[in-house]
Amino acid sequence: MLTVFGYSVFLILLYFVALLFILFNTFFNYRRKNKRQALAVDFPMVSVLVAVRDEEDNITRCLQALSELSYPKDKIEILVGNDASTDNTVKLVDGFIKNKKQFSFYDIKIKLGKAKGKANVLAHLAQIATSEFLFITDADIAVPKDWIQNMLPHFENNIAIVSGSTYVEGTNLFSKLQSLDWMFFGGILNSFANAGISCTGVGNNMCVRKSAYTSLGGYENIDFSITEDFKLFDELRKAGHGWKNILNAPTLNVSKPVETFSQLMKQRRRWITGAMELPWIWKIVFIVFGFFTPSLIAVLIFAPKIGLFLWFIKLFLEGIFLAMVAGRMQRIENLGSYLWFQLYSFIIPVFYMYYFLKREPNEWKGRVYA
Image (cartoon, rainbow, N blue to C red; front, side, top):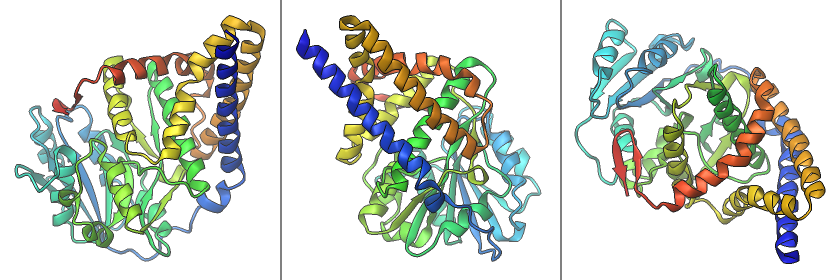
């Protein structure tokens, strides 16, 4: 019993060490790594790539936001690729882009090399794109109007890929919990990036130099991963290209939440599968974070007062962290659900572990990936 208690306290203390490291880099290194650059005044040609599959509930919102980008219309091409949609997505896209010269729509039917699904659509669109800068977002995203001008200045020195952050917007408690969850992970990702520790790109909010992308042979030449954004980021990093993860309001994309718990688990299981390819330091972080809940339960059983005290420390430190992240995103409206988020974050790792250990194939957008 003492051994279980001791190991549990040790894992909790490791969690607090990791959290203090995250807080330090969020507070002290943030301005140096995330300072707002002056808006781009030179306007190079840019391409926006959007892969769509059965997005009739989302695509109009996405296209509307892209059509309202403040970037010069003659300097931007927006390429939308259809991935065998079975709903009204194609009809909605065709209707929206009519008479909008900056938009083009492609029905993707040929598989390129190793690419599958979304990666295959992006591979096709990247070949079609005529610019050096490939902006990538998703159909459930609304981009800010100055997105392009605020991302471009971060391509300094040898930077080949820049990722912004994403905020989940919604009105019910389930969507607010997802919002805080995304903010928490986005803040951790940015904190480690501030310390020079790489992780991944954010597939619904990133831009990559086409010259660096093509030097890899494109998605068609990269081993397939269900988390294609991580795979591209990792291959660019391994090839010696620079990267940057930024967290600020001007580059913040807004996503719709998933609607059901089942969809959430499928999404997170896909992410966890992709996380198996992460560097060892991230695997340690996920293990420490994942075992906080069972460790705290063990401490609460053997020493309730100590367990409650440790939980209060977590509540305090994570509250400071989320408040800083929300402030920098300029989206503080969901902080009122923070106590509910604490309950959510206490319970949800158990479901993550259950769904992951089931070892079933990943299902996403009606497709099954082994």
